[in-house]
Image (cartoon, rainbow, N blue to C red):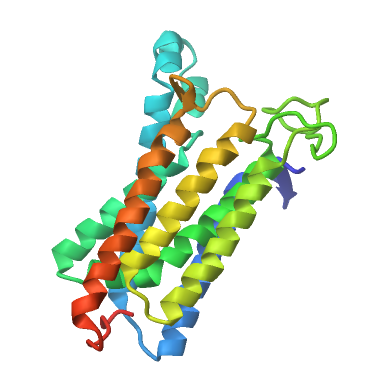
Length: 268
């Protein structure tokens, strides 16, 4: 594992580098799709940019909400050591579900403001969500955060992590989730190329990821995720997420029935 890379004499956090790689890969995917469709659409690019901002804000807000008890306890350090306080609670730590719904909300607001077909935007942008998250989870593994429970056979020792235990083999649950995200990217990209309904694509993503994340949480070993009773915060969010995905699949099926043979949305 490599928490940091040394590039040109400077230490670069591996997670940040992998996250940026995911964004660049998503941009490349969008440009290749534009080339395939022989069109250039500024609305797609702007919706992608605004969704990234919404994802960052949403992920940070949910992380802060999760860490509120720790923030209250550490509040005196804001005056004594402000740099360390800001580093711990504002400049690091993100929760994916906050980023997911932040991105979707901003994309919806942009579609409403510009009078665009939200389903068509989803058709083009959803694969990028899975792609970026997949790279991010690889970054989590290399950093040693979001680690799994101890397992003597399938576990991996993370000796250089400043977060995970050093001497215990831990399940690489980050890589399991990364593999799921890359698979979802392939599925969503294929659906997009077939011009499937964006709501159906979102339904597939939310239902699949919600169920998978709920069970993957049982393999997580880190304790700073936040808990609601016996469930982790992500498990509590996964249940309504999966139900929302199922609802969207049913909604997309009803939308398709009366409009069979209709013209496809222009953005798709």
